[in-house]
Each structure stands twice: as C-alpha cells, then as structure tokens.
Image (cartoon, rainbow, N blue to C red; front, side):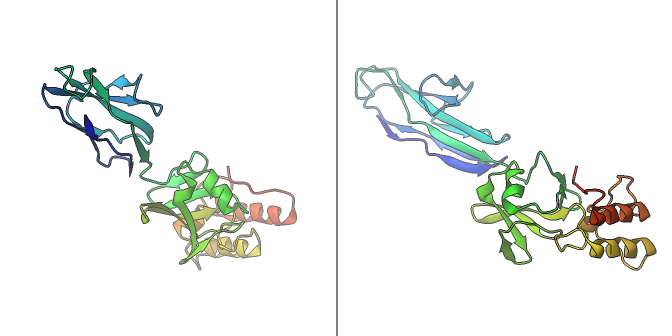
Length: 239
C-alpha cells in the first residue's frame, strides 16, 4: 500500500524541491520509478531515468508547471495488498516561478535596478500584463504606499513577492517623464535643461526616460522632442 503520497510544491527557480512517496508491503521487495507529465495524470508520463528511489529532487531551472508521480512495484504480486504488483501514486503538482522580474516588452536594467521603456499613462494593470511574472505576485509602490492607479510614474517601484517576501524589485522609468509627475510637460524640459547646463545630475532612472533619439546623450534635441510632444506635433512613445 502507498501510505504517504507526494505533495504539491510551489517554489522559485533553482530552489530545492523534494518529492517523496511511502509504501509498505507485508512481503516482497519494493522498487520505485518516478515519472513526469505535462497533465495531471498518473498514467502516460515520461520515465525519469535514474529516479528509482522513494524520493526525487525535481528540477527547477525552468519556470512552469510539471506533474510527477511514482510507480511502486512489488516483486511479490500480493505484497501491495491486492492482486496487482504495481501501484501508482497520486500526482504532485510542482510549480516553479521565476526568480526575477521579467518582461518581453519592457527593458530590465539589472545593473541599475530599473524597469525602463514604460509608456506614459500606463496603468498598474497594463504594466502587470506586460510582465512574464504572475500578476498576483506583483505590487507597485509609490514610496511606502501601494499604488493601484491608472498612471505609473518614474520613480515608483515594482516589487515581486514569493511567500509574502520581496525577492526582486525594480525602479520604474517612464519614457518622457524624468520629473516623475506622470506627465510629459514643462517640468521635464526643466530637468533636461538643468542636466545639460550642469546644475543638476540626473539619476540613471531619469536618464533612461529622456534619450528620445537614442544617441546616448541628453541634449537640446531631446528637449525638442518634449516640446513637440507638448505642442502636439509629435507623440513620445516608448519603443
């Protein structure tokens, strides 16, 4: 009889996930073989080579969901409490989550801890939808207060949670909003002007908002982009 089933586990990439099964028999010798499956079924899975103990350490290098089960075989047909020599455990659902904030749309600057190329007037829901992470694990903060509104701003923080602990966070850089007021306006021109004349040194987060022509220099051309946006002759959009 299988007396203890493998349990569902959720963890992050590269963490240790240990599965185990307990079986007893009045006679005979028990052997074990673990299987993986893309569906929640303890039949039709893929045999895992070398996984022949009553415990198995599941791989966690890739995120996603995999189901595992163990087939216990008794050399004595009657030893498992029935005429069958083989018993399959229930499936264990192993969920592996990302260990970092990832996006296929925004740029993650790991050196400076930034999430860049976020468009102006992006809502929290829109930002979450463009991250690879589970939206339920993501929160946006304006200072120490959680923000749930319709327009994230430069300087806000996106935090990634696992088991109620923050495991990664990035500062949001909204393209065209160095001033952090959620608008593209005269305040942003003043930031760029101060940077150009040397009366203010923009942070990495602010600099990432303002290189509109992509020449890696903040200069008068970037001010002209903001001016054109304000006048309505050009629209600044994160690429």
